[in-house]
Amino acid sequence: MPVKPMTIKDLASFLKVSPSTVSRALNNHPDISLEVRQRVQQLAAELQFKPNSFAANFRKKQSKLIAVVLPKIYRSFIPDVIEGITKRLSADQFQTLVLITEDQLANEVEAIKQCCDMRVDGILLSLSNQTTDLQHLERCKTMGIPLVLFDNTLQSDAFASIHINDAAAAGLCADLINQQGSSRVAAVFGPEELSISQNRKLGFFSNLNKDIEVASCYAKDAQAAFRFADDQIKKHQTKVFFGISDEVLLGIVTAVKEHNLAKETLVVGFSDGLTMPFLHRELRYIFHDGKVVGTHAAEQILKSVAHGVNFNEHIEIPVELY
Image (cartoon, rainbow, N blue to C red; front, side, top):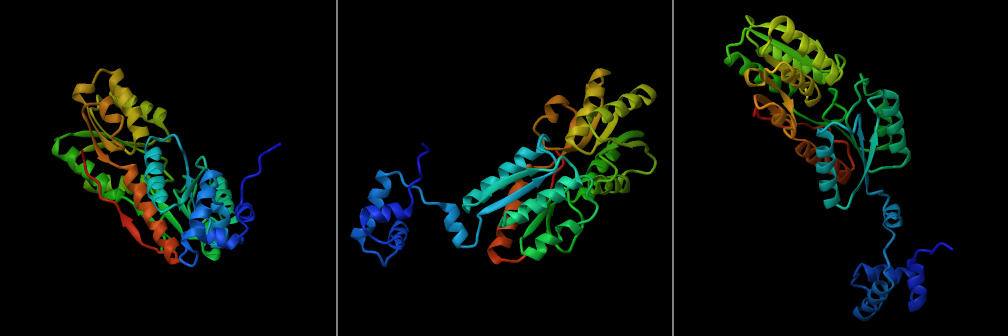
């Protein structure tokens, strides 16, 4: 037979007091005498009683649950984001629910619906590659559930966002290439439909010297980036590359290594700095710290939950070229 969890009513029955007295005694309420508080707390300790936080939160009309909706989980950047979020939320006694959309808009829509049905206190959302508008988020506004966009975002005055200045950061990479005196560069961007790809492409080309010859492509994964980089090396002996992400950089660096050009090839791009610098010593990168992104996102959603409003602040996280 399953063991039934001990309840406040059970404690009250043992001690012959009311359940409300037990509840207040466990919370050290000054209206309850010290003698009664000690008796209640001693028995609770002996019986290893744990208060039902879900029931307490229900009475307070809070779930103490923040949903984190992510497009993918295997990117090296994402575990750091989750760590930053959960560490900050747990400090305020909030729990985290992680939902993965597999970069599918339909899954994102369903995830948001699930969050609303569960009455979570807030939602942190990194958009899928297929998301082009935020119409499906109107339900959150209607239900008064705060939502913060982070990392992969769309411009919106309706929701707060946490992001880096992608165009300015890509411009720093272009400045470095200008300083190298290169005559040719191969640039690899992510999926074309992503705003992050377009913004980084805009910043890169805006800063790059006009007399530098550029070959560019959109790559959906490391394999596509590898094929492009391999072709550029074979046909043009290209020795300067720009990559939009760790996944893209992995493809580029693999091609460089296969041609034994590691020591004479400059690769510059965006990275979390955990793996790629060890795979290619000549890598220069914009450090995109997932823990910082996660912490800022968590702080923003906690602020919205505490005030009961959906702030529409747009926080830009500074980055450096390493």
